[in-house]
Image (cartoon, one colour):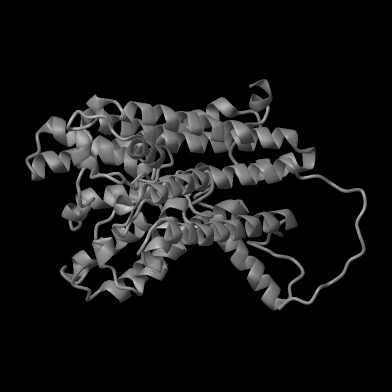
Length: 444
């Protein structure tokens, strides 16, 4: 145990695994379900993993299968999973920085841009405060709307609002309605606070805090903040326009709404696609042309050190700058008058290619484990699980036990994998005192 505690790269996955197992045990209790029956182990494990990994994917009808105790446990597990992964990422960054050389430590401090290497307490308080403020605002707005406009009893409106506020900020995706948020798809007072909370939670604390501090001078932002903020804006616009273009006349999604409601629904669904997990349209009713767009947005995900999953916005756009520099024949990769370190480029390539391999391997495994599942459905479910998005085309609930277990593994790896991999690469960085002769193999 002492050897384990010396290595935060091992400690974080271990902590999440213990949390998942505890959550599984609590959800198996008979008083966690509406029928007061013992929940099968695999169902409880799937739900606990989905909550802790802030995925939101489910193999049962969440509002009808679980009672108040079970739903409370899902809320707690989602909050612990969301805040835990952010604080875990923060602590790993700080610990990794301490174990690097002075030059590397200064680089890490420049990238985090907000806190000193040892200022852990203030950092964690800022993260907890951000979560509390964001969830509280969503809760107040949503409670007032449900109470005054929908005649919900105040206590019921408050509980529903708290549950969905926690899910939104932590990019969880569980909902207290069998059709997720489709019933509120044209209600801006319900949809917009949840969508904005999802986006804020998915940006990541380093980008949020620096952007808030230096909002008058975006040119002074660190490279990571620029890539995260402007990259997220670009992805939101691209997803919004793509959703409108493809689904405008689809009677199963946007086609049934007036033009102004189409704009609202398309924006909300676009915000929820990148690991938010809620849906305001029927995902199974999307046009075939929409699936590549949705899968791509899920694969990219949100910002680093955030509640979102995916390969991260920074990774995606850093690779785009690498490709652009190579096409132009530039000797260096530059972003905003800053040269990007070669080590960062290699890390981005490693994360992206390993994620592609996991998606491809997971898709093949799911097809082999499940008879008759279409390729696009397997690819969608695997990408959603690995990127901790939680959207589904109706396959997850009908999978056999081996298929459900495969998704459990993918959700856990998708939540823990990028953090563990990135920290391991940073900790294993070493400087050689010599270099081998150079060759240039033929590429392409």
